[in-house]
Image (tube, rainbow, N blue to C red; front, top):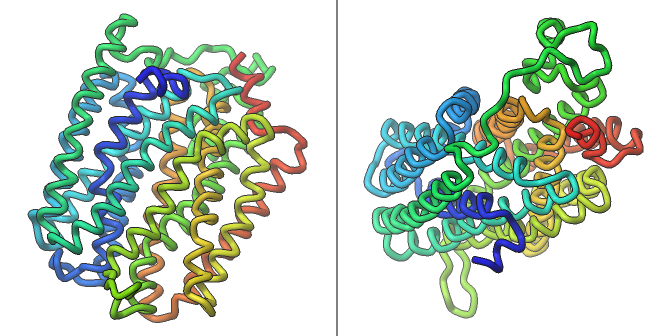
Length: 444
């Protein structure tokens, strides 16, 4: 425990443990549902709907989570969310049919809104701009550890013992979140509040834009476009708001393409290329296991997130993003034109690492730019960009695969990433400023 505290404050550590324990079922379903649709009693056409349902509901539940956390603290909402997460994992194993699985996916989406926003706020409050990327990376790496177990071990269990036992096992693993939430509650009680520093103060009547003649309320009314896209932030300059919006758009692109299209369709891609599975040294490997190994490299790359965060803190987060996107483009082109399946698969881990590094940089950027009294609303809106992208990705991919080839699907994803790179470069590269420089001036 003391060793881990060298990398993250105690409250961030407890939150990391909670998310890492409860995320297994969700990660596992992305692996086994596309390759085992018959076991779940659904059609292939509905796979994309189920994989996206938890993200679609978060369009609404992210805002609800911000409201709940501001008013009730984090302990009670987190405790309820833990129970929901365990219940949904068990439901995946026990239930068959689209309707009940859809309800489970929606309930998980609501719970995850609470988990994610609690983690964002705890991390932002416990860090400064000089170490925010590293600590945010630690939090990400903990969640990725749970995802690795869910995808890799869950896929193996699914192939060996079947759907019911495998999902009940990962549901039982979620019980490990209970001691972590108890420890977090004690830590918050020790500092004398159920919410710590997360309760947001009321907005002041003093603008942070150097324009005191216009009140924040008037600025909110005038800037309805920004309010819708990034939430009301009258304290920020136009350039700072543009930075947040650009980070949100880039975040959206990564999750649409790399998390939604690529990860969501990987099982289908493998089943088409290897319909009979894979045999290595006389050992037959099922598609679910193989897909789990590949996808788990995505989560494994998240274990390096603290280092990626450190690089962004020290050398500039915009540089991380601008280098990462071309790496992702190479991977998408290899998937679109898979002359060698081995080369295609071997380049996926670097692409996943590049994605993880960029997401860590973007998380730290927006967290640093968000004014202290509006962090819950800004981060919940930022998270919604992720959910929109992650929801659209599988839906578009599986809908397109119904009438076109995977080649065009991956090319379309590459086009979106090129556009994101161009927008990001136009805002950040030409500014000559490290990401977070503006945030330091706002939050001093």
